[in-house]
Figure 1 (cartoon, rainbow, N blue to C red):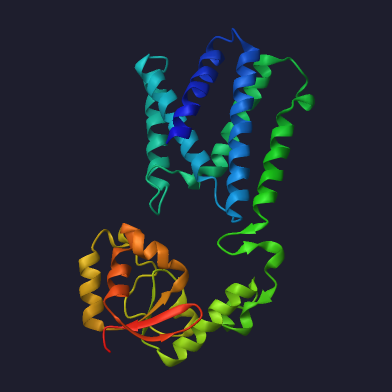
Figure 2: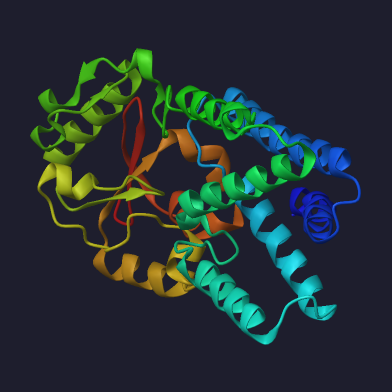
Length: 291
C-alpha cells in the first residue's frame, strides 16, 4: 500500500504533462525513475527470497496509481462521460478478475499492464525528445524487463534455484514424471510416499497440494490448504468435520513456527496441540485424535 501511494504523484505528473507538456525533462526523469525503482525493488525481492514470485507489489502499485489518477480526472472533469464509464468498467473488471485473494491485485492483467507501460513510455519519450523511433531508449526498457524476468526465472516458484533442481521426481511418484526438483524436496516426497502407504486415510497440514492425487488416495477433508481464508473463516466447521471423520494428520515440520503464531492457521494449531503423536519422520509429525 505505501508503494502504491508513492507512485500516485508520478502518475498524476505524467497525466498532467500529457495534457500540458511544460516540463518534458522532469516528466521523463520522473517516469524513468518510477520504472527503474519498480524493477530494482522486484529484483531485490527475488534476491532476498531466493524464490520466484510474481510482481504482486508492483501490480498493486500500478493499480492504485491508475485508480488515483482516474478518480482525479473524473473529479476535475478532465474526462468526458464515455471515457469515465470506460475507465470505471475496466477497473471493475481488473478488480474482479484478480482471483484467489486478489481483490485488490489484478495480477491476471500483467501483460496488458506491461503493454500500457510501453505506450505511456513511448509518449513520455515523444514529449521529451524528437528522436527517430528506432533510437528511442524505450527499447532499453524492454530489454531490461526481459533481463529482469530471465533473472526471476532462475528461481523456480517455491522450489529453489533452477541449477539445483536435477532429481527426477517421476521415480518417487509416476504422476510427477518429467518434473525435476532438489534433493531436499525429493526427500520430502519420499517421506510422504512411505507414510501414505502406512496411513492411506490421511490429511496433510497445513498445505501439501496434490498429496492425495500423487498417492492415489482419497482425501477425507477436501481442502488442500487448511488456512482461515480458504475456509471462509469457518474454522469451527472444519474442526467438527475433522473430529467426526478422524483422519490421520501428516503435519509438515517446516510449518511449525507459523502454525503456532499465525492466526490464519488456527485450525492447524488446534489439531497440532490436541491430537496424539503416532509417529515422527524427518519431515512430518503423524498425529491422530485416537491414541
